[in-house]
Length: 159
Image 1 (cartoon, helix red, strand yellow):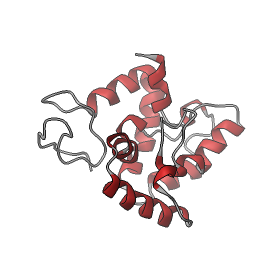
Image 2 (image 1 turned 90 degrees about the vertical axis):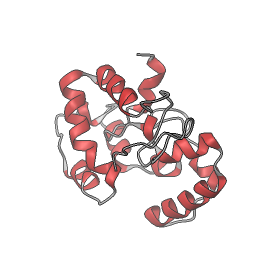
Image 3 (image 1 turned 135 degrees about the vertical axis):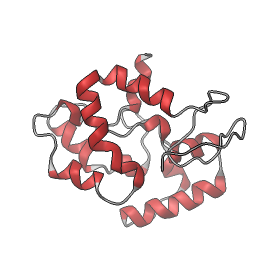
């Protein structure tokens, strides 16, 4: 696995390579980005502009607004850790609440962190990269994609 992909193993257990915000930003999908900025603004409780959605992954130097304001990320870093999978206090209330906050893609973080602990981050990243690819053309897909952005293949969708 390319070391650069490690930026996609978010501290909270999300796989940033399948982030719908990241995908829309990379495609320059202005209507989708506007809708996402509005949704993120509601989630965070303050205005969010499209420019605030640029992201290279939660461990990169370019973070989208929700990642910049992530209490889980802040907690891990304050403890000198990169990910919750390294924390002796896992599972904690912060991660459990995030897992159970009603957003479908968040509902996998506890399972993802346990899997990272079981197989290691590199193997987990390889599994996730494979999981979030179109079975027809191998293009990257995202958490909520109903069809492939490259070949229009209908995807089963995880959420």
